[in-house]
Amino acid sequence: MMIPVVVVILFVVFVMIVANVRVVPQSKACVIERLGAYCTTWQVGFHVKVPFIDRIANSMSLKEKVMDFPPQPVITKDNVTIQIDTVVYCQVTDPKLYTYGVENPNFALENLTSTTLRNIIGELELDETLTSRDVINTKMRSILDEATDPWGIKVTRVEVKNIDPPKAIQEAMEKQMRAERERREQILIAEGHKQSAILEAEGKKQATILEAEAQKEAAVQKAKGEAEAILEVQKATAQGIQMIREAGADDAVIKLKSLETFAKVSEGEATKIIIPSDIQNMAGFLASAKELLK
Image (cartoon, rainbow, N blue to C red; front, top):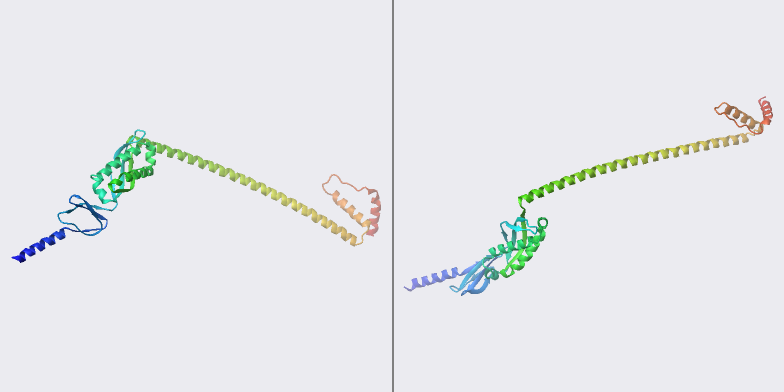
């Protein structure tokens, strides 16, 4: 009779031990109450609770959670009703406060997000709301993080997903955008014509400058050529005089050559011929030439 009783007792003890043993996995936490009051918080590892005295009041994940709230109507400073939906990233940092801080923390966070968003958007006009998402996100994260500290929740990030103005305002904005695009297109076309005209004028200017430079260079080269030709003629004349002197020619020969030069000049197109002042000695020149020819 004793053996079955012992077996039953051992079995009951085994069942009670198994029922009161808990292994807490990574990124999990359990809040333990003893006789209805908070006792401790189990973190990762092996734990045993006292039967009939301890109980697990709450078990939660310590991972970052993504809470996607539905769109809600919000009124801007200029009395325009828009629909905004937000996403809140949060994480449980204190399991005790999360358990005892507020009833239904997720619902409380959703309502707090809604009221905070209304307060922030109510200070902005529609245009500011559409272009200030980063400002809205930063303000909401700061306010929500501070407000949820007593709940054991840390708000890590807030993102505004969509901002939907009324249909009439959307149509007006689309018309304004089309008008702005057309205005920019006209400006770009005008700028293109302007740049084209400037480039064309610059091209003509450069062509004129190059042509003037070419003419200048041609004139310079022509002048240089004429100067060199005159220099060569003078050199040839000087060499001829030097050769005559070296040949021992007297004044009669030189004068005879001068007469030959005058004869050649008279055959040209010149209408005036300047005769030397000593033309009265021309007979003497001719006589000397005659003697030389004999």
